[in-house]
Image 1 (cartoon, rainbow, N blue to C red):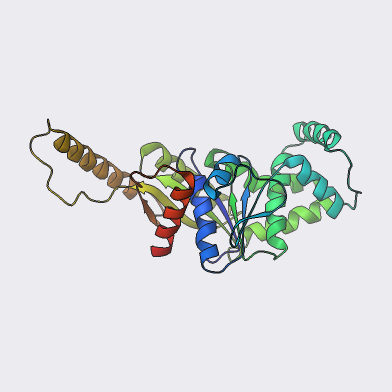
Image 2: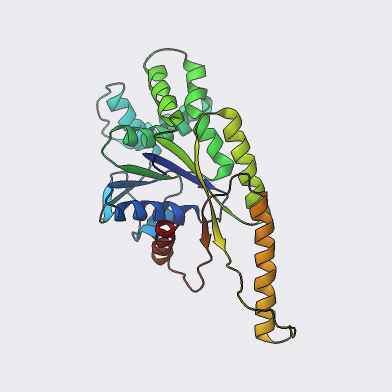
Length: 282
């Protein structure tokens, strides 16, 4: 993957935040200056990067990796100041209330503000790579389509100009790509296939890669005939899960890198580090 912006999505529970952090860590190891962004739910990304929380201002959380979490009222304030030349507002509370009222009346506003921050950071060229821990696959479509939705409502003016460059940057396959994280299980595989089909039909963004997480390696030994023993039962369970995973891997329309199941690894920082190791090797 050589894009400047990676939007990482997937069904809830597949390890999306861990992979987002790992992609940022792996790129930093290669000497890149990386910005990791929590778009909606920020706690998972923060935990995997080893910090308690993410602020709206980019902060270096480890060598070469900066991180921030999007706060929509703050993003709207930044948009008003930079694009519409509105002076910085002293209190964010009124902005938040006005924003909620506007977002309730106009479809795509919330998502456009969120996507706008991600795309703006990419456009500044301050970063070699921007990795966004994006909304889950069930909600990613509304964020990807948001600039087009707003453009269809507005039609002209500064807002239309802004949504145009956002559409152009998101649709530039050389600069922007979607990373789908999935598991070799029925529900994640089905949702991944449906999301990839929608992405292909809409043509608003390219798919950089599909990453399948928590894959079991072959057992490497014969399963004992006596399944009543703990070893026999564990071996049979491993073999059964392995076969089931291979079945669902074959159903994926786009099969990219596969990450192993990390036995005995429970800390979020260690998980991200280990996944980064695997991404380097694969």
